[in-house]
Image (cartoon, rainbow, N blue to C red):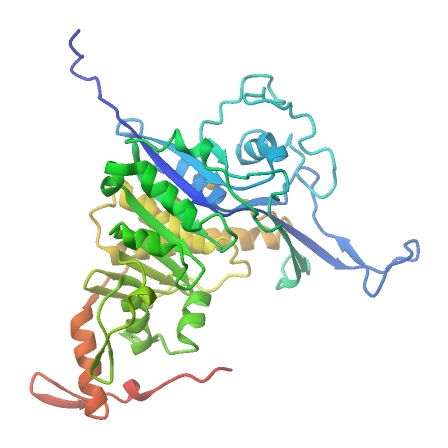
Length: 462
Protein backbone atom coordinates (compact mmCIF):
# COMPACT_ATOMS: atom_id res chain seq x y z
CA UNK A 1 0.00 0.00 0.00
CA UNK A 2 1.36 3.41 -0.94
CA UNK A 3 1.78 5.94 1.82
CA UNK A 4 -0.48 8.94 1.89
CA UNK A 5 1.09 12.19 0.73
CA UNK A 6 0.94 13.75 4.16
CA UNK A 7 2.17 10.67 6.02
CA UNK A 8 5.45 11.21 7.82
CA UNK A 9 8.04 8.47 8.06
CA UNK A 10 9.04 8.85 11.67
CA UNK A 11 12.19 7.07 12.80
CA UNK A 12 12.91 6.31 16.43
CA UNK A 13 16.31 7.29 17.77
CA UNK A 14 17.42 6.19 21.20
CA UNK A 15 19.12 8.49 23.68
CA UNK A 16 21.03 6.64 26.40
CA UNK A 17 21.76 8.57 29.59
CA UNK A 18 24.13 6.72 31.88
CA UNK A 19 25.73 7.84 35.11
CA UNK A 20 25.32 8.63 38.76
CA UNK A 21 21.76 9.18 40.04
CA UNK A 22 20.68 11.01 43.17
CA UNK A 23 17.59 12.04 45.07
CA UNK A 24 17.95 15.51 46.59
CA UNK A 25 16.07 16.60 49.70
CA UNK A 26 16.07 20.24 50.74
CA UNK A 27 14.87 21.21 54.20
CA UNK A 28 14.12 24.73 55.40
CA UNK A 29 14.35 25.30 59.16
CA UNK A 30 14.45 28.20 61.61
CA UNK A 31 15.56 28.36 65.24
CA UNK A 32 12.83 27.63 67.73
CA UNK A 33 12.57 27.95 71.53
CA UNK A 34 9.38 26.52 73.01
CA UNK A 35 8.98 25.47 76.64
CA UNK A 36 6.87 22.47 75.59
CA UNK A 37 9.79 20.84 73.77
CA UNK A 38 12.49 18.99 75.70
CA UNK A 39 15.81 17.38 74.79
CA UNK A 40 16.47 20.05 72.17
CA UNK A 41 20.26 19.68 72.07
CA UNK A 42 22.50 22.64 71.27
CA UNK A 43 20.02 24.26 68.87
CA UNK A 44 16.33 23.56 68.35
CA UNK A 45 15.08 23.98 64.77
CA UNK A 46 11.50 24.09 63.52
CA UNK A 47 10.50 23.09 59.99
CA UNK A 48 9.40 26.02 57.83
CA UNK A 49 7.84 24.14 54.92
CA UNK A 50 4.33 25.54 54.60
CA UNK A 51 2.35 22.94 52.70
CA UNK A 52 1.62 19.27 53.19
CA UNK A 53 1.50 18.50 49.47
CA UNK A 54 4.64 20.38 48.40
CA UNK A 55 7.36 17.86 47.58
CA UNK A 56 10.81 18.50 49.01
CA UNK A 57 12.39 15.87 46.79
CA UNK A 58 14.09 16.79 43.55
CA UNK A 59 16.11 14.86 41.01
CA UNK A 60 19.85 15.07 40.51
CA UNK A 61 22.42 13.62 38.14
CA UNK A 62 21.34 11.32 35.31
CA UNK A 63 17.71 11.31 36.44
CA UNK A 64 17.41 15.08 36.16
CA UNK A 65 19.01 15.13 32.70
CA UNK A 66 16.56 12.42 31.63
CA UNK A 67 13.52 14.45 32.65
CA UNK A 68 14.78 17.75 31.22
CA UNK A 69 15.54 16.24 27.81
CA UNK A 70 12.52 13.95 27.70
CA UNK A 71 10.12 16.82 28.29
CA UNK A 72 11.80 19.37 26.05
CA UNK A 73 13.09 17.83 22.82
CA UNK A 74 10.12 15.84 21.60
CA UNK A 75 8.83 16.84 18.17
CA UNK A 76 5.81 14.83 16.97
CA UNK A 77 6.40 15.85 13.33
CA UNK A 78 10.03 14.73 13.21
CA UNK A 79 12.20 11.86 14.29
CA UNK A 80 11.04 10.49 17.60
CA UNK A 81 13.41 10.09 20.50
CA UNK A 82 13.07 7.32 23.03
CA UNK A 83 14.99 7.44 26.29
CA UNK A 84 16.97 4.94 28.30
CA UNK A 85 18.43 5.89 31.65
CA UNK A 86 20.91 3.61 33.34
CA UNK A 87 22.46 4.00 36.78
CA UNK A 88 22.66 2.17 40.09
CA UNK A 89 20.21 2.31 42.97
CA UNK A 90 18.70 -0.09 45.48
CA UNK A 91 16.73 -2.84 43.74
CA UNK A 92 13.84 -2.56 46.19
CA UNK A 93 13.31 1.03 44.99
CA UNK A 94 12.78 0.16 41.31
CA UNK A 95 9.04 0.90 41.30
CA UNK A 96 9.32 3.85 43.66
CA UNK A 97 12.01 5.45 41.51
CA UNK A 98 9.83 5.13 38.43
CA UNK A 99 6.95 6.79 40.24
CA UNK A 100 9.21 9.49 41.66
CA UNK A 101 10.40 10.44 38.19
CA UNK A 102 6.89 10.49 36.74
CA UNK A 103 5.65 14.10 36.98
CA UNK A 104 1.97 13.14 37.19
CA UNK A 105 -0.10 13.32 40.38
CA UNK A 106 2.49 15.28 42.38
CA UNK A 107 0.05 16.33 45.12
CA UNK A 108 -1.14 12.78 45.71
CA UNK A 109 2.35 11.44 46.30
CA UNK A 110 2.81 13.34 49.58
CA UNK A 111 6.57 13.53 49.16
CA UNK A 112 6.95 16.09 51.93
CA UNK A 113 8.53 16.12 55.41
CA UNK A 114 5.10 16.04 57.03
CA UNK A 115 4.08 12.50 56.02
CA UNK A 116 5.63 9.07 56.04
CA UNK A 117 2.96 7.57 53.78
CA UNK A 118 4.62 8.76 50.59
CA UNK A 119 4.61 6.05 47.94
CA UNK A 120 3.65 3.15 50.21
CA UNK A 121 0.75 2.03 48.01
CA UNK A 122 3.00 1.09 45.10
CA UNK A 123 2.61 -2.50 44.00
CA UNK A 124 5.73 -4.49 43.25
CA UNK A 125 5.98 -5.79 39.71
CA UNK A 126 7.59 -5.03 36.39
CA UNK A 127 4.55 -3.14 35.10
CA UNK A 128 2.66 -1.99 38.15
CA UNK A 129 -0.60 -0.11 38.09
CA UNK A 130 -0.51 3.55 38.89
CA UNK A 131 -1.82 3.76 42.48
CA UNK A 132 -3.50 7.08 41.69
CA UNK A 133 -5.65 6.15 38.67
CA UNK A 134 -5.43 2.31 38.58
CA UNK A 135 -4.24 2.37 34.99
CA UNK A 136 -1.10 0.72 33.69
CA UNK A 137 1.83 3.09 34.23
CA UNK A 138 2.51 4.98 30.99
CA UNK A 139 5.82 6.53 32.04
CA UNK A 140 7.72 5.56 28.91
CA UNK A 141 11.50 5.91 29.53
CA UNK A 142 13.33 2.64 30.07
CA UNK A 143 15.08 2.61 33.45
CA UNK A 144 17.91 0.11 33.82
CA UNK A 145 19.32 -0.57 37.26
CA UNK A 146 22.93 -1.74 37.07
CA UNK A 147 23.07 -2.64 40.76
CA UNK A 148 24.54 -6.10 41.22
CA UNK A 149 23.21 -6.76 44.72
CA UNK A 150 20.80 -5.48 47.33
CA UNK A 151 23.57 -3.63 49.18
CA UNK A 152 23.63 -0.83 46.60
CA UNK A 153 22.15 2.38 47.97
CA UNK A 154 19.70 4.77 46.40
CA UNK A 155 21.95 7.78 46.89
CA UNK A 156 20.35 10.69 48.72
CA UNK A 157 21.67 14.17 49.38
CA UNK A 158 19.99 16.11 52.19
CA UNK A 159 20.68 19.82 52.55
CA UNK A 160 19.40 21.75 55.56
CA UNK A 161 18.98 25.50 55.18
CA UNK A 162 18.37 27.96 57.97
CA UNK A 163 16.31 31.04 57.35
CA UNK A 164 12.86 32.18 56.34
CA UNK A 165 11.22 33.66 53.29
CA UNK A 166 12.84 36.83 52.01
CA UNK A 167 16.13 36.26 53.81
CA UNK A 168 19.37 34.97 52.45
CA UNK A 169 19.51 31.18 52.90
CA UNK A 170 22.27 29.77 55.04
CA UNK A 171 23.24 26.19 54.28
CA UNK A 172 23.73 24.57 57.67
CA UNK A 173 24.53 21.00 56.74
CA UNK A 174 24.71 18.53 53.89
CA UNK A 175 24.19 14.83 54.56
CA UNK A 176 25.14 12.27 51.91
CA UNK A 177 23.54 8.85 52.28
CA UNK A 178 25.43 6.53 49.96
CA UNK A 179 27.22 3.20 50.02
CA UNK A 180 30.19 2.33 47.81
CA UNK A 181 29.30 0.37 44.68
CA UNK A 182 30.64 -3.17 44.98
CA UNK A 183 29.86 -4.26 41.43
CA UNK A 184 27.63 -3.62 38.41
CA UNK A 185 25.54 -5.98 36.30
CA UNK A 186 25.31 -4.92 32.62
CA UNK A 187 23.07 -7.76 31.43
CA UNK A 188 19.92 -5.65 31.55
CA UNK A 189 21.56 -2.95 29.43
CA UNK A 190 22.90 -5.18 26.65
CA UNK A 191 19.57 -5.79 24.90
CA UNK A 192 19.07 -2.04 24.41
CA UNK A 193 22.46 -1.29 22.85
CA UNK A 194 21.55 -1.55 19.17
CA UNK A 195 21.80 0.50 15.99
CA UNK A 196 19.05 2.85 17.16
CA UNK A 197 21.35 4.36 19.80
CA UNK A 198 22.26 7.78 18.41
CA UNK A 199 23.18 9.72 21.54
CA UNK A 200 25.00 8.76 24.74
CA UNK A 201 25.00 11.22 27.62
CA UNK A 202 27.60 10.60 30.34
CA UNK A 203 26.98 12.04 33.82
CA UNK A 204 29.93 11.24 36.07
CA UNK A 205 30.02 12.40 39.70
CA UNK A 206 32.77 9.97 40.61
CA UNK A 207 30.46 7.57 42.48
CA UNK A 208 31.39 4.48 40.47
CA UNK A 209 28.74 4.02 37.78
CA UNK A 210 31.00 5.44 35.08
CA UNK A 211 34.16 3.33 35.11
CA UNK A 212 36.40 1.42 32.70
CA UNK A 213 34.10 -1.61 32.67
CA UNK A 214 31.02 0.49 31.89
CA UNK A 215 32.74 2.25 28.97
CA UNK A 216 34.20 -1.04 27.72
CA UNK A 217 30.75 -2.61 27.81
CA UNK A 218 29.14 0.30 25.93
CA UNK A 219 31.77 0.54 23.21
CA UNK A 220 31.95 -3.21 22.67
CA UNK A 221 28.19 -3.70 22.51
CA UNK A 222 27.71 -0.83 20.04
CA UNK A 223 30.23 -2.40 17.69
CA UNK A 224 30.13 -0.99 14.15
CA UNK A 225 27.57 1.62 15.20
CA UNK A 226 30.07 3.26 17.55
CA UNK A 227 31.14 5.87 15.01
CA UNK A 228 27.54 7.01 14.46
CA UNK A 229 26.93 7.93 18.10
CA UNK A 230 27.17 11.44 19.53
CA UNK A 231 28.85 11.45 22.94
CA UNK A 232 28.06 14.20 25.45
CA UNK A 233 30.19 14.14 28.59
CA UNK A 234 30.09 15.79 31.98
CA UNK A 235 32.59 14.63 34.58
CA UNK A 236 33.44 16.18 37.91
CA UNK A 237 36.70 14.21 38.06
CA UNK A 238 40.02 15.39 36.63
CA UNK A 239 41.40 12.91 34.08
CA UNK A 240 39.09 10.01 35.04
CA UNK A 241 40.63 6.66 34.17
CA UNK A 242 37.57 5.56 32.18
CA UNK A 243 38.35 8.12 29.48
CA UNK A 244 41.30 5.95 28.44
CA UNK A 245 38.79 3.43 27.10
CA UNK A 246 37.19 6.09 24.90
CA UNK A 247 40.60 7.25 23.68
CA UNK A 248 41.48 3.69 22.69
CA UNK A 249 38.39 3.61 20.46
CA UNK A 250 39.37 6.94 18.82
CA UNK A 251 36.12 8.51 19.99
CA UNK A 252 35.84 12.28 19.72
CA UNK A 253 33.14 13.56 22.01
CA UNK A 254 30.65 16.10 20.72
CA UNK A 255 30.55 18.09 23.95
CA UNK A 256 32.25 18.21 27.33
CA UNK A 257 31.03 20.31 30.28
CA UNK A 258 32.82 21.20 33.52
CA UNK A 259 32.11 23.69 36.29
CA UNK A 260 34.14 26.24 38.20
CA UNK A 261 35.13 23.85 41.01
CA UNK A 262 36.67 21.54 38.42
CA UNK A 263 38.48 24.49 36.81
CA UNK A 264 39.91 25.77 40.10
CA UNK A 265 40.95 22.28 41.20
CA UNK A 266 42.75 21.74 37.93
CA UNK A 267 44.38 25.14 37.39
CA UNK A 268 44.28 26.77 40.82
CA UNK A 269 42.81 30.21 41.62
CA UNK A 270 43.49 32.01 38.34
CA UNK A 271 42.17 34.96 36.39
CA UNK A 272 39.96 33.42 33.72
CA UNK A 273 39.11 36.64 31.95
CA UNK A 274 40.06 40.30 31.81
CA UNK A 275 36.91 42.05 30.69
CA UNK A 276 36.30 40.94 27.12
CA UNK A 277 39.68 39.21 26.91
CA UNK A 278 40.32 35.58 27.76
CA UNK A 279 43.01 34.99 30.36
CA UNK A 280 45.90 32.60 29.88
CA UNK A 281 44.34 30.19 32.39
CA UNK A 282 41.26 29.92 30.13
CA UNK A 283 43.39 29.04 27.13
CA UNK A 284 45.26 26.41 29.13
CA UNK A 285 42.06 24.85 30.45
CA UNK A 286 40.18 24.91 27.14
CA UNK A 287 43.20 23.52 25.31
CA UNK A 288 43.68 20.69 27.79
CA UNK A 289 39.99 19.75 27.65
CA UNK A 290 39.98 19.62 23.85
CA UNK A 291 43.40 18.02 23.40
CA UNK A 292 44.89 21.04 21.58
CA UNK A 293 48.41 22.40 21.54
CA UNK A 294 49.57 24.27 24.65
CA UNK A 295 52.48 26.60 25.29
CA UNK A 296 54.64 27.67 28.22
CA UNK A 297 56.49 30.95 27.65
CA UNK A 298 56.45 30.41 23.92
CA UNK A 299 57.53 26.76 23.99
CA UNK A 300 55.23 23.93 23.02
CA UNK A 301 54.21 21.63 25.85
CA UNK A 302 54.10 17.93 25.02
CA UNK A 303 52.18 16.27 27.86
CA UNK A 304 52.29 12.53 28.37
CA UNK A 305 49.67 10.75 26.29
CA UNK A 306 47.93 9.22 29.30
CA UNK A 307 47.61 12.66 30.90
CA UNK A 308 45.82 14.19 27.92
CA UNK A 309 42.06 14.43 28.00
CA UNK A 310 39.72 12.77 25.56
CA UNK A 311 39.58 14.94 22.45
CA UNK A 312 36.31 16.82 22.13
CA UNK A 313 34.85 19.15 19.53
CA UNK A 314 33.23 21.49 22.02
CA UNK A 315 33.84 22.35 25.63
CA UNK A 316 32.22 24.84 27.99
CA UNK A 317 33.09 25.90 31.53
CA UNK A 318 30.30 27.36 33.69
CA UNK A 319 31.18 29.74 36.54
CA UNK A 320 29.24 30.72 39.65
CA UNK A 321 28.69 34.27 38.40
CA UNK A 322 26.52 33.04 35.48
CA UNK A 323 29.33 33.59 33.01
CA UNK A 324 31.14 30.99 30.93
CA UNK A 325 34.03 30.33 28.60
CA UNK A 326 33.75 27.96 25.67
CA UNK A 327 35.58 26.53 22.68
CA UNK A 328 34.39 24.95 19.43
CA UNK A 329 37.42 23.62 17.55
CA UNK A 330 39.47 26.82 16.94
CA UNK A 331 36.72 29.25 17.98
CA UNK A 332 36.91 30.51 21.57
CA UNK A 333 34.09 32.38 23.31
CA UNK A 334 34.14 34.65 26.35
CA UNK A 335 30.57 34.89 27.64
CA UNK A 336 31.36 37.73 30.00
CA UNK A 337 27.88 39.32 30.12
CA UNK A 338 25.75 37.25 32.51
CA UNK A 339 21.98 36.97 31.92
CA UNK A 340 21.48 38.08 35.53
CA UNK A 341 23.14 38.21 38.94
CA UNK A 342 23.93 35.17 41.04
CA UNK A 343 20.73 33.98 42.72
CA UNK A 344 20.05 32.81 46.26
CA UNK A 345 19.72 29.18 45.15
CA UNK A 346 21.94 27.76 42.42
CA UNK A 347 21.19 24.06 42.77
CA UNK A 348 20.77 22.29 39.43
CA UNK A 349 22.18 25.16 37.38
CA UNK A 350 25.02 23.19 35.74
CA UNK A 351 22.66 20.33 34.87
CA UNK A 352 20.25 22.71 33.14
CA UNK A 353 23.17 24.37 31.29
CA UNK A 354 24.45 20.96 30.14
CA UNK A 355 21.00 19.70 29.14
CA UNK A 356 20.26 22.88 27.20
CA UNK A 357 23.42 22.51 25.11
CA UNK A 358 22.52 18.89 24.31
CA UNK A 359 18.97 19.88 23.37
CA UNK A 360 20.15 22.67 21.06
CA UNK A 361 22.52 20.29 19.30
CA UNK A 362 19.60 17.93 18.58
CA UNK A 363 16.87 20.45 17.69
CA UNK A 364 16.62 21.74 14.12
CA UNK A 365 15.82 25.22 15.40
CA UNK A 366 19.18 25.64 17.14
CA UNK A 367 21.61 23.02 15.80
CA UNK A 368 23.08 25.40 13.20
CA UNK A 369 23.64 28.26 15.66
CA UNK A 370 27.25 28.96 16.52
CA UNK A 371 28.39 27.47 19.81
CA UNK A 372 28.67 30.87 21.46
CA UNK A 373 24.99 31.56 20.81
CA UNK A 374 24.05 28.12 22.10
CA UNK A 375 26.06 28.75 25.28
CA UNK A 376 24.34 32.10 25.78
CA UNK A 377 20.95 30.41 25.41
CA UNK A 378 22.06 27.74 27.88
CA UNK A 379 23.17 30.41 30.35
CA UNK A 380 19.71 31.98 30.12
CA UNK A 381 18.04 28.61 30.81
CA UNK A 382 20.31 28.01 33.82
CA UNK A 383 19.68 31.51 35.16
CA UNK A 384 15.89 31.18 34.82
CA UNK A 385 16.05 27.87 36.69
CA UNK A 386 18.00 29.32 39.62
CA UNK A 387 15.80 32.42 39.62
CA UNK A 388 12.65 30.31 39.94
CA UNK A 389 14.24 28.22 42.69
CA UNK A 390 15.12 31.42 44.56
CA UNK A 391 11.57 32.69 44.11
CA UNK A 392 10.31 29.48 45.73
CA UNK A 393 12.69 30.14 48.62
CA UNK A 394 11.24 33.60 49.16
CA UNK A 395 7.78 32.04 49.35
CA UNK A 396 9.05 29.53 51.93
CA UNK A 397 8.41 26.73 49.45
CA UNK A 398 12.01 25.60 48.86
CA UNK A 399 11.19 22.36 47.09
CA UNK A 400 13.75 23.07 44.32
CA UNK A 401 11.84 20.71 42.06
CA UNK A 402 10.35 23.09 39.55
CA UNK A 403 8.65 21.99 36.38
CA UNK A 404 11.12 20.19 34.14
CA UNK A 405 8.79 20.65 31.17
CA UNK A 406 9.55 24.38 31.42
CA UNK A 407 13.25 24.06 32.23
CA UNK A 408 14.31 25.04 28.70
CA UNK A 409 11.55 27.57 27.95
CA UNK A 410 14.19 30.26 27.41
CA UNK A 411 15.13 28.55 24.14
CA UNK A 412 11.77 29.66 22.74
CA UNK A 413 11.75 33.10 24.35
CA UNK A 414 12.89 36.01 22.21
CA UNK A 415 12.12 38.73 24.76
CA UNK A 416 15.32 38.53 26.79
CA UNK A 417 18.44 40.42 25.79
CA UNK A 418 20.64 38.53 23.32
CA UNK A 419 24.12 39.86 22.79
CA UNK A 420 25.91 38.95 19.60
CA UNK A 421 28.58 36.41 20.45
CA UNK A 422 32.10 37.28 19.39
CA UNK A 423 34.65 34.55 18.93
CA UNK A 424 38.44 34.54 19.12
CA UNK A 425 40.80 32.31 17.18
CA UNK A 426 42.52 29.85 19.53
CA UNK A 427 45.82 29.90 17.61
CA UNK A 428 45.90 33.70 17.41
CA UNK A 429 45.21 34.02 21.13
CA UNK A 430 48.18 31.78 21.91
CA UNK A 431 50.34 33.74 19.46
CA UNK A 432 49.50 36.92 21.37
CA UNK A 433 50.32 35.31 24.70
CA UNK A 434 53.61 33.96 23.39
CA UNK A 435 54.64 37.34 21.99
CA UNK A 436 53.68 39.16 25.18
CA UNK A 437 55.63 36.62 27.25
CA UNK A 438 58.86 37.57 25.47
CA UNK A 439 58.08 41.26 25.10
CA UNK A 440 56.97 42.01 28.68
CA UNK A 441 53.32 42.44 27.78
CA UNK A 442 53.93 44.39 24.56
CA UNK A 443 52.17 43.52 21.31
CA UNK A 444 52.29 45.07 17.85
CA UNK A 445 48.84 45.50 16.33
CA UNK A 446 48.48 47.07 12.89
CA UNK A 447 52.00 48.41 13.14
CA UNK A 448 51.38 50.07 16.51
CA UNK A 449 53.17 48.84 19.62
CA UNK A 450 50.86 48.50 22.63
CA UNK A 451 51.49 47.67 26.26
CA UNK A 452 48.75 45.45 27.66
CA UNK A 453 49.26 45.58 31.41
CA UNK A 454 46.46 43.10 32.12
CA UNK A 455 48.54 40.26 30.65
CA UNK A 456 50.79 40.48 33.71
CA UNK A 457 47.97 40.34 36.26
CA UNK A 458 47.34 37.22 38.30
CA UNK A 459 45.24 36.00 41.16
CA UNK A 460 46.09 35.15 44.75
CA UNK A 461 43.88 32.75 46.65
CA UNK A 462 41.81 34.54 49.26
